[in-house]
Image (cartoon, rainbow, N blue to C red; front, side, top):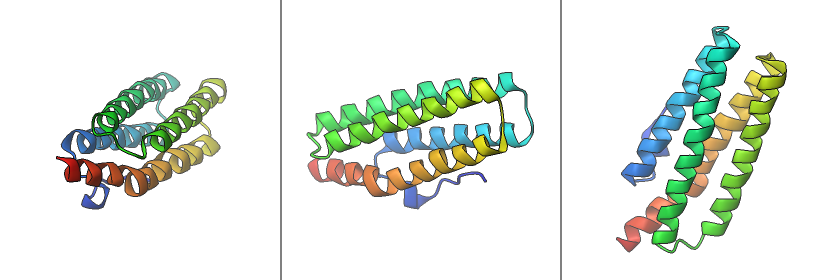
Length: 134
């Protein structure tokens, strides 16, 4: 099931919103490639890109939090680190076992659900804080 960007996911900071849109687009590419039975090489490329992109996004987001002295920085940083760890486990499972129905479900749950919940419950706080400071 593909993720859909909507205004409910907007944090109101263009750089963050644009990066979130990019992550959602790549997750959709990943889910599409897996559902279409694309080769391990193609799925692996999307996973590798996504892993790198997420790290860059979290770094950019954390830099904004530091710039504005966001009080929830430590909690956000810990959640980002946990996500990267969990994503690495999914990537390793793919590299070991290939595409399985269990992996597809895990990716949907751990990537799609986590990202949606994180944006709505955590990242929106950053956006509101930055708007208040600016």
